[in-house]
Image (tube, rainbow, N blue to C red; front, side, top):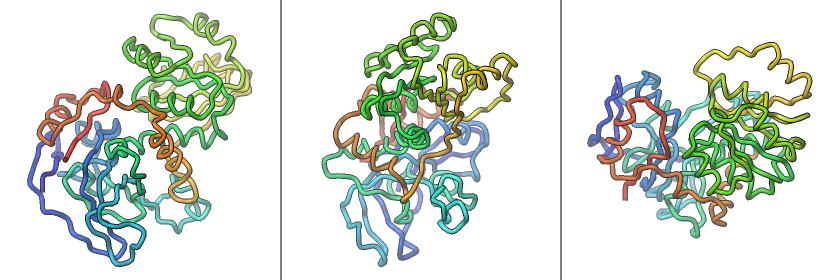
Length: 347
C-alpha cells in the first residue's frame, strides 16, 4: 500500500509498505480516504520530534471500515468512521475519573504508532467514531481539530451567551470561532496579526476582528467595550506574546482558556500578571480534547455541527492532493507553520 513516510531530518516521501492486518479481536482495519496535517506534526517532521523514524504520521483522518475483529459488533464493512487518536489506559486514577486527556499511560495513533497517512490502517475500536451517512467523508478528517476548541468550551462550562474571543486565527482558532457562533455565543472576536486570516474570520462570521500588530491595546479595548463582560478568551497561537495579549485584552472576571502549546519561555511583566488578580480572571489549561463518557461530548458535538452544516471547512483548506502531491506540499513547508489545512486524499 502507499504510505507517506517521514524519515529523520525532514525527509518526506511516498513508499510502498505492507498492508496492516488485524491482530486482536478489538482491531478495526480502515481504508483511509482523507487525512489532515496537524500543526503538531510539523516538529515531528522537521525538528526530530517523532518518537521513532521512519514513521507514518496522521491522526486527523476518516475513511471506511474494511474488516473488524471478532469482538466488534457495532461496526461493519463499509461504515464511515473518523479517528479518535488517543488511546488511554482506561485504568489509572485519571481515567477512572474520566480525565482521559490526562492519562499518563496513553498511546496515540500517528505519533506513538503509525498513523493514517496511508491507504490502510489498523486501530482499536476505541480509536474510532462512526459517522452519519449524511456527512461528507472528508469532513470527518476535521473532527479531531474541531474538538480541540470544543474541549476548552467543555472545561469552561460552555460558550452560550458568552462573548468569545479567539487569539490566533489559524485553523484551530477559526474552527473554534465557528463553533462558538453555532453554540449560541453572544459575540465572536478574532485577533491575529495576519490581515488575510482576519479577512477570512470576517467572512466566517466574526462579530469583531482586530490586528494586534497594527492596533494597540487601547483600540482593541475600546472595540470590545460592549463585549467586556461574560468573556471567554481562547489563546490558540501558543506564543509568549499572545498569552500576554490575551491577559491584557480580557475583561472583568473573564475566563482564559490556554490551548496553544508554547515553544519558548513565558515571562509576564508584573503589571500584566497583576491584571490576572485585579480582573479576577479564571485561567483554564486545556489539553487535548477528551471527556466522559469516552471519547466525550466534544466528539458528538463536532459530529452534529458538521452533519448540520454549521461549519465552513472549504475556506480553511490550503491544499488537497494524492500522496505525491501531499508529500510535496508538506516538504515545501520546510518547518514553517501551515497557512491553511493540508489534506491527503487517498480515494
